[in-house]
Length: 323
Image (cartoon, rainbow, N blue to C red; front, side, top):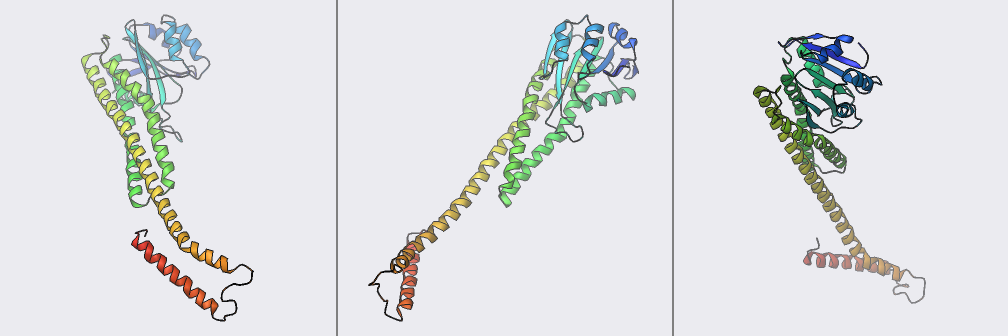
């Protein structure tokens, strides 16, 4: 098996499959029995293999399958469909919101899928095929894949929602500038998730309404269930973004209140010491005629006068309700 071919199976129609190698892959893709080949987009031989071995497909399909950048969508063509989905990135040391694309050409006789990075949902289906519990036809394959993609999204979005709850609790207990970075990261993740989930919702909605003959009512009901879930996920992401913005605004208000309170205290202190500073500065000039210069008790008299002024100021400020 070439290194550009990651997986290949002939389905037995009972949930199992027979691995294919070499020329049997190309031949099986042309036959009436359902076969699946999974390719690595990054490999230099992939595009040439597609053009050579599945030349009966529209060149537009090959170009779309090997495109550098993709968004979730579905395009029906001559009884088959070009389907592009995205799944959360569950690879080690990867960011879940860096969603991985999976591209398909699927019809009643063949499934050709491509990946740029490893997607767990694809290998979940392979494990089911090995266990004899995999898809029996093309419709079951795509409905099962959609279900696995949705299943892997659930814990990631639940964890994101829990982080929002924790941020709200931290705001109530002890608002601090360190929370701001966490809130920004939450909003950023929600925005990136939604960028791909919203078009994926539309693609699943279009797929469930398709009249392709290899999609039966059972498959459409399963896709409808996945569609309902992703609608809820998109709504949850909108709610997470709004809650994160509210938390950010509340944090800004709390910090602004703290700053205003501190500035207010400093302003009151400055107001109290303003006349004291004026008097001490006035009496500290080095010229003749300073009152009390020859009186040994002048310092204590002046100090007492300053204390009286401070008490008078405090009394006035309290009556004005400045503090």
